[in-house]
Image (tube, helix red, strand yellow):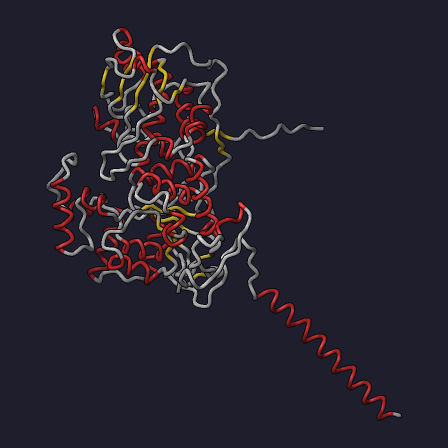
Length: 530
């Protein structure tokens, strides 16, 4: 009897043991086996090897999940999530500190016009705008010309984009921007039409190079007086034609409404940009790196760090043959020592490591074709293998509508950069400034602006062996960038002692920092006492 009882007890124990093991296995797999919804990328065996387009077949999904159609790139991966403690660089840094945005101090957008602001008065004539430069230079110019039209009571004709600059982009306004939204969003500010009336299309017009950084008096007096003889005024250039400061508050707010609300990208660009953001988010928190190491930038600036003599000579010839680049003879060593050169990919890698970002940090390269390609990217990729770009996140078929159109490709980079967890520009050009200002407007998202002048001195010490790549370097880099992360501050005025054009040139551009004109402290609800 006792023997039968013992056998039964043993059998019961075996059943319970099997049940417990089964439950444990289910729990284990539910935690460690990633389950991707259909809009997420699958996990590939090799985290840094991208399979070819024939390796995976995608199912047809709804419009919201259409990025997994067969045209979508099957070469995405699920990057490993960053660890809680980061010891891939010198020092140990808490992950949340690396990604945490600066306190916004309760600043929120406030772009509504004042109670005295009226609908546009009767137009005195038509303003034709010829924009110049790359995407972000044109964007700023368009928004300024909206304000100028308000000042001189003009009807704006949809601006003409620059087709003659270095990039030779044939895009029209409606190819890059949402034309209907632009017109409707500014209907209470200025009248905007798509083209001149037929009777004026071939008539005489005033062609004017508006004076740079001009205030209200210049436009109300000198430019508005042209209406006495002409019905059409053509602005031959649009960049930097309006002062950054000392304008009526309603004009400043109009500039912000134009820039951050009315000037929306064309629907097909917005859709593709959001798609790229979603795909980048599948890796986790990511850095958008505006790596200004492209042929045009290096040729224009004369910067030659990390380039071969043959490459430096090639870029010099490009600079000499580009007529509208006035500066031809450049001392690259002097320019770099003053912080006027973009960081090289190698220098960016050292910088990110010193800040504490681990090697598994996903990085989106917001840039055109990197000069020298893999030969110059190798040093950065050795530190950060998860380097992505629009060309890697999207298939050739998806990007085909935007390819060979520099402004449209730049717009995709702009969207991914504005939406990134951290934005870092290697150079403070038009793109960097525009993205920084937009991120400030949207809540002071984290933007780390490298102190290039100070960093160059550290990089040179590393090169000469007087400083080691380790904790000391990391502490110095972290400390010098503690207050360069996009926290709220008023826009900087001119440098003391400067005069004339140089005084205006030294001011912080309006679109880099819209505070105080377009950002206000959020009003806290009134507390009642019992």
